[in-house]
Image 1 (cartoon, rainbow, N blue to C red):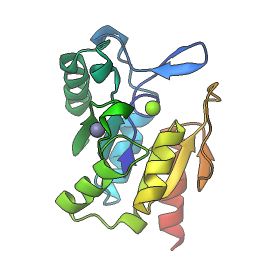
Image 2: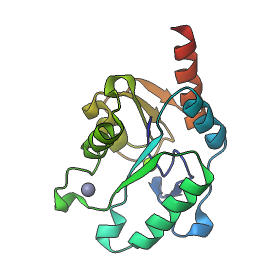
Image 3: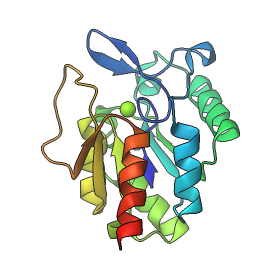
Image 4: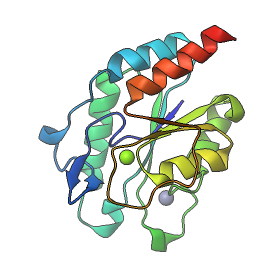
Length: 174
Ligand SMILES: [Mg+2]
Ligand SMILES: [Zn+2]
């Protein structure tokens, strides 16, 4: 399982219809159902890898320390295997900023993950496109943000909990 962070694991801060990461540890709020859903997916055999774009670090508006503090708090609270962050902005032309699949491909190599048997869950088009580029099944968590929408996805859901229910039902059915 590849999971976006802000808006999937923890609540995104929405301003003018667009989502932003928490601006402090005080603003960090794990969404309802995330803990149970992750535990159920882990029990079903999935590795749980968070892949997150944090371009505000390159833009100088958020410190890398804050991103890492939030990541550590999430890892302490939840059964995550890893959190991989891209700290770049578009101008950096890195391989890891979603919609590029670099973080997913690196994790797949490290953990020996079967990408076509994997899922990417995200709340923005970049997440969904990165999942598609890596060859995963994709879930779009649709909060109806006022921004570009993904071109295509396999499932549209309201939460990670809903995505987990669909995945676990599909596994039971086969
Ligand atoms: Mg997000
Ligand atoms: Zn990057």
